[in-house]
Image (cartoon, rainbow, N blue to C red; front, side, top):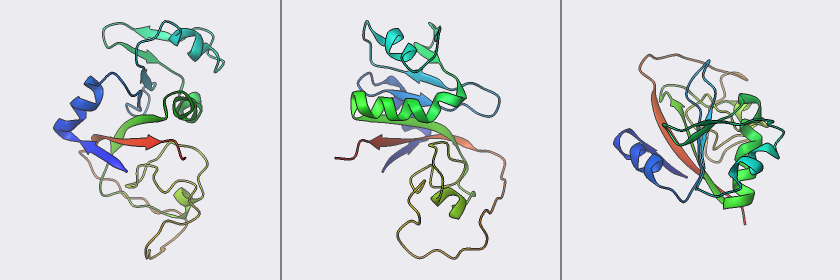
Length: 149
């Protein structure tokens, strides 16, 4: 997994070849930054979004949270990879609830890498089905998801 945070995050947002799907935080709709193409609005509408909102100042599309996983999968089909940018808190832990997850939204330290894996590699001490801690000062981090060959 390619993962970046801090200063390097700007380079992910500045590049124009790989789509970037941004989960900005609770209460904020995700944003999608696509490589420029005439048919982008139509491609987004094919997901069932009747009128995707273009944020011209940021050159990003505002998308419904409910379409997050679908957009990850569609980006993988069309582009072969997608950057997912989301709040990340290093103190959060991974758990069986993550390993059994079916969606791409992740709240734990793995940032979705272990989602749906039915158990990540390596030795884990399982405390419970779900374990949560909260630390202030979360930061944004990105992970590159690539289509499996």
